[in-house]
Amino acid sequence: MAKPVDFGTRLRSAMDASGPLCVGIDPHPALLEAWGLPNSADGVRSFSLTVVEAMTGAAAILKPQVALFERFGSAGFAALEETLAAARAAGLLTLADAKRGDIGSTMAAYATAWLDDSSPLASDAVTLSPYLGYESLRPAIDLAASTGRGVFVLGLTSNPEGPSVQHVGGSNSVAKSIIDQVTADNVAAIDLGHVGLVVGATIGDAPEKLGIDLTASKAPLLTPGLGAQGATAQDIAESFASSYGQVLGTSSRDILRAGPSVQALRDKALSVRDELLAAKQ
Ligand SMILES: O=C(O)c1cc(=O)[nH]c(=O)n1[C@@H]1O[C@H](COP(=O)(O)O)[C@@H](O)[C@H]1O
Image (cartoon, rainbow, N blue to C red; front, side, top):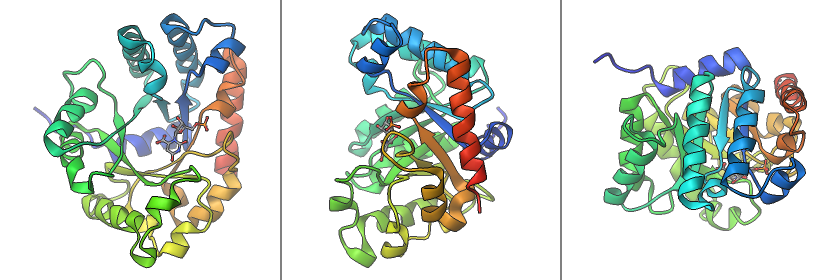
């Protein structure tokens, strides 16, 4: 069988075609209510399919937040499967925000669930938590490589509690050690590698303070924190500087609040995308 095109190449093509934007599908109860939808699996399905329709051609990738589907059990997972299938049919990449991380043998099962062609939940990429040690993620990193998919490993997260773990060690910080290992996994990539990093839009000068070189990592950089958590495209441009070309700006509530009108959602996403493009230095 022909080797699949690698994730970094597929993501770069999508970013070139539609802009450097990832739209989160986070069907929170308050958003469902604002959209006039029930707080149920049916409501979540309708919400998510509307986002897929609105974002076709306006975003490079969609990021369904798995917990907001999972809360409805099997019916919620069915809605997630339908959402992933609709995105695929529309030519949109998908990033399952599941934040998985476990001992290697269990990690292999998580990898199969989110990254194997045979799984109904197969996505183009999945978010991973490296707290059990970066190498414990190996089954997912390797399966992603062999199936043309990607992973996004938490590096410097957007929440205020993140530094209490990630900055520990100063110039030899926990975050730097994770990012160094991502860099090693992406070494053969020409442009973007298949191992992405989650680096919040809210991190300020943390990379500089911690001596972290995001550019050398060749990682696609997912930057939550834009919009609802207070960060702007300009903040991202300042924090990321020479790695800005790797940035995939991501926003959920700030864009989703424009719904339920498909046109209003699309217009809002396009304006966030244009701000990201304009902030490029
Ligand atoms: O991995 C993530 O997506 C993530 C990492 C992080 O550091 N911060 C963060 O906010 N996220 C997710 O990104 C989304 C942000 O949502 P908004 O704040 O509504 O834009 C949520 O789904 C979070 O779970």
